[in-house]
Length: 344
Image (cartoon, one colour):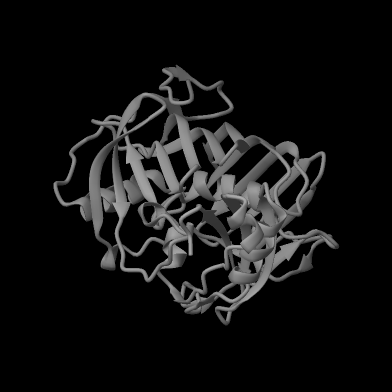
């Protein structure tokens, strides 16, 4: 069974407790419930003291990236972080301090799947604007377990190739718990947090999955999380590193869809429609600072003509520039296109 709650203590190197994340008091207002969840499930919130995180990961082939097995370590302070990734495919050190971002020479930014794991352990609600949010609250079953789910509602012009029930993210909790257990991005795209730990009264995913239709794409297991003195992060030591552009931000697809300005639907290939060939195509798009799609990589597809139609359509999407801390940034966007026989 995927979803579980374990009661044990991680070895001494990891100073946090694995316990059921009991709910202290559930706000009746759904927005306030999620606001409380953001504070309790985020490790880099204002006021947090420096920490060191280490987790083991396993990723599989994803878009143009090859699968990897290794370890990620992060030393975080309110003024920046040091990130070290060691694996059989990708090895790099990345430091962000008051002078900018520095990375190992001749290395690409952190691979997307690894970045998804890191982002959803540290700040699983990244990009969520609660000042303008509305949620639908309902009970829903996953793997024979009933969750209380909060689906972000929004107004979106859409065509028949997208399932409107899955356009926005869904955050799910076990009843009587305040630890985030599951994020659903689109049909079949889930981030289950099967084991929850507590660190400084914050809920932390100890075992995290990244699941796409037809396959589990990545898994992470946290092996250490402990407080550190600021000096241990070594933010000023950039010896052997070079100043680099930041990697595209990783943001939930539903949150990005609310920023869409123009989205042409893909044309259903006539040969596929005639032969009653349908299916799902998943692509990874990179959105530039200007809101235009810079690049589209295939993640998963079972039909070449549907792949071509999807990529050609996504290349024409346009967004409002995505701002983080007031600055326009590049963003990775995982898009799922569903072709059904009734599509026009």
